[in-house]
Image (spheres, rainbow, N blue to C red):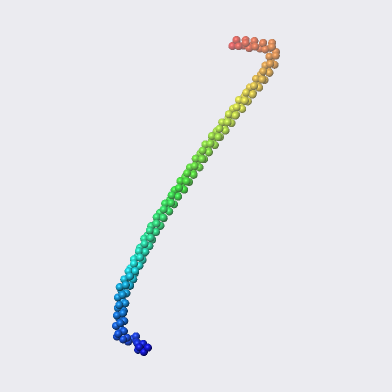
Length: 170
């Protein structure tokens, strides 16, 4: 213990200084040979990995911005197509409605004309029936009058002679 009591770090012994330097040099040589190169290689590899990751992230950002731009273009095209389709659908609807109105008007006109023709035909049939009936009634009345008038035969013969004589005179 006495040996440790004399020891001072501030004032080392020359032998201790030499052995410490030799051990430190040997330690430094072994570390540089076996530890510093792998640590340096690991640091370089880590640096390359970090740079590669940064480059990939930059490329991914650029690709993402490119995809976003393409997406915006596609959305704009889709909106234009939707607008065009809606416009075409509206025009088709208006055309179909106009065509349906036109066909309905033509059908209405045809039915009205047909109804007017039917009414006219029925009117003509009624007039013909009325004329036939009135003619038949006139014939019946004339027949009854003639029977009554012809009941007096001498008067009729005299009238017929006077008519025949008047015809010859003309």
